[in-house]
Structures are given as structure tokens and as C-alpha cells.
Length: 440
Image 1 (tube, rainbow, N blue to C red):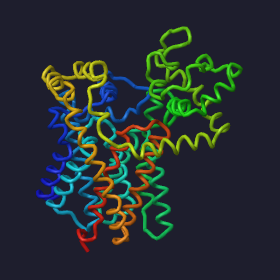
Image 2: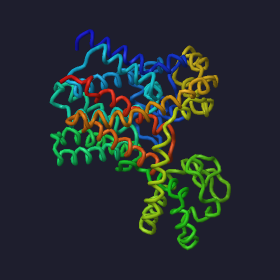
Image 3: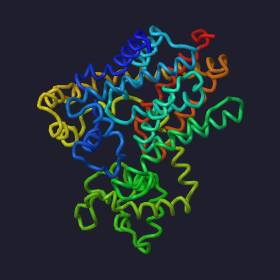
Image 4: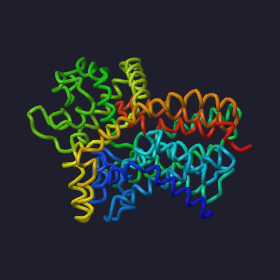
């Protein structure tokens, strides 16, 4: 790669992680502590794949968390560089810096790139799969191999990314049946690799050969809040003999409370005794209840999923990852355990840890919303005028946004960060697909 291109990617990376510079430290979420604990403990967490924690360790080496956030910025900047090259017939340093500046200043992209959470891999999986399937001819052999490894890592890093990737492969198949030449094998390869990695790590860490050994607990949490699982429990208990039969009077409850509240049925039994790793203990029963709920009320489950999907589509603001909630319990002990006193002091002095970060930046939400609303007709017009690869790219991204909302909102719970991590692709795509700015 020429030095000018490398410099442009480096500048783009710095732009894409500007919230970390403003904060004085990489952005963190309560779950970030769990991912750090995966290697600092080390600890195999029942609710998280053993993927993103090792990724963080590969770049921090107990020295500083600035390493992983810089790596995330570079990866995203490079993937955007490759996307420009495929869609525009080439990428220039100034155009790339302009695109990254737009993404950084007008969208929520930097609030995923600067955040030490696997959310950053959602847009990388989407763009990487598109490049492998539709733009491989414009990539070198090394770039294709790099993208296969990167997308496989991204798919494995978060449980929601596997169904998202499978859905996008299905979309690519439909586009191929329509008229587009698509390399389906190149798209399927990282999916297969990711599944293999997840199965192996779960077999070693949990002793279970499964893609998601305890995923049924999350699905049950969603279904009991929405109602179908609660209705089944109240109809079948106490005769069914399930553990949850003792708690039907408490259901439904918010999914997050069901999973994590100290006094929820998952974490405290009917006698008031704490249940260590209650989610793991509940998983076999949860799988049975979910299966029977799907058979008993498939339409009710579908209606709830669609409703949650629609809520998720309209929820993509920044803010739920910008405060210091649970830092004292979930984050600070991990940094104190694994890093130097200097790193701990930098964490303590950051705006986020001091509670002065969220209020300063949430006023950006209306602007981000306006940019997305304006981008939708621009993207539709640009894709239609551009036809060809531009139209395929627009359709692919719209499918990704819809799929992300269905998976995260419908199967987990609607949260702004689930939408914010991917919705910014639409305004960026509007720029990339604009006919006047694309090379012939």
C-alpha cells in the first residue's frame, strides 16, 4: 500500500475514534469488564463468546486499552477504504478522509468504533460480506484472505452476528438469482469458520458442543416479557414441575431484570437463596419452555418479534453507552487487576468515569436522526440512478439494518446501541453510491 493511502487510513482511523480523545480514554460499557475478565481472570463467561476478550488482549497486553481502540479505528477505516475502491472504481486519500470525517461528525459511527465492545464488528461484518461476495474481483488475494479472517472474527464476536451473516448470505443468493454475479462461497467461508470457532471454544470452555450453549435463557427472557412464555407457564404450572413454576406470580418482568437482577428467578430461588450462575442452571429448562412456547403460540411470538423489531428500527441514539453505570463494580476492578497504576489513573480521570461525558454528547442525537432521515431518499435515488453495484449495495445494507433490528430487538430487547452501531451505514452508503461522485 502506498504511503499516501496508509496515511489516509491512519487519519480516517483517528477521526473515527474521536470520542475516545474527547473522553481522555477509550469508551467503556458495563459489559466491557466481562470481556476484559475473559483473559485477565481468565474466566469463561456463560453469556459471552470467548472471542472479543482475546481480541482486546491481543492489542492491550496489560499495558493500555488505547491499543484496542486504535486497532478498531484502523480496521474500520481500512474496510471503508476497500468499500470505496469497490464501489467507486478506486479510492483516493482525500476522498477517504472526507468520507471518514462525514461518518465521524455526522453519524453515530465513532461511538461504536471508540467503544470497547463487539458492537464495532456489526458494520464490519456487513461491509466485509458485501466485499467478499460482490467486490472480490477488485481485491487482491491478500485482501480477500484478510477479509475472510476479519469477518469470521466479527461473526464469532457476538451471538447476534451469526444469524445476521446467514441472513445476508440469503439476501446475496436472492440478488444472484435476480441478476448479480455473487461469490457465495467467499461469503459462506467466514460464516463456517466462525461457527467452527464458536463450537470449539464452547466445547473447551463449557464442555458443550454448541453454537450458543445457553442462548435459550435469553430467548426465554424475551418471550416471558412479551407474554407468550408467561402465558404458557401460567397454563402449565404447577403440573409441569418446572423451576419457574414457583415464580409465575412475578412474571412477566423486564427481560434485563429477569436475566440480571439479583432477586430475579434466575439469580435467587424461591427460598431466597442466591443461585450462582443461575442462567447456566436454567438453560435446559429454558430450552424446553421456549420450544413449547413456539409450538403453542407461534403467531403471538411472531407478533411480539415484529413489534420489537419496529421499536428497534426507531431506536438508534447514542447515550446508553456513554454513562458510568456499574463502572465501580464491573470495570474499575478489572483495570486495577490487570493494568498499571498509571492506566488506572487515566481511567479514573476520564470524562466518562467522572460522569461528565453523556450529557455533553447526547445533544448530537437529533442531528444524527436528521442525517439518517435525509439519507434515506438520497440513498434510494442514488442507488436507482446508479443501478448495478450501487443498487445491490443499497439493498444489502437495508437488509442488514432490518435484520439487525429483528435479531437484536426481536430476540433480545430493543436498545439504542443495537441500532446506532449499524444505522450509520445508510448515510455513508448514500455518499458512496451518489452517481456524480462515483468514477465511471
